[in-house]
Image 1 (tube, rainbow, N blue to C red):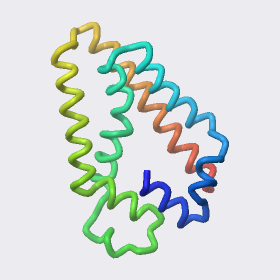
Image 2: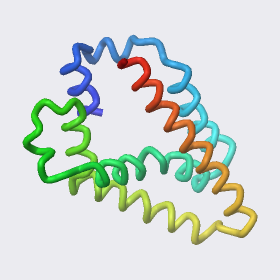
Image 3: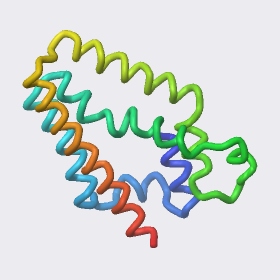
Length: 139
């Protein structure tokens, strides 16, 4: 969260601004979906719902990171890309992946796979809507 607060401050939003801002519908949709998955399902459901965020950020950042990124001091997402493509966050994502695999090894069935794939698809769409909301409001 420190990274997100630092970036927001650079863009003129304080930590208090972030805490007091009304939630956008896209934020509510994704966060409540994740919470609902955890409350109505089990730990595997929760981890699948979180995967587009926890694991996805590392995947996205790794794909767009480049050696030149460190020198692009004016790139608006430079810090985000460096943070999420770096080794410390790669370890977080790898740990999340291992946890997901361990949970799946204990509870996966063919029917469960179909249900979890649908859950992951919905979580991914909601995460994409979250990003799109931010892009739309930034423009």
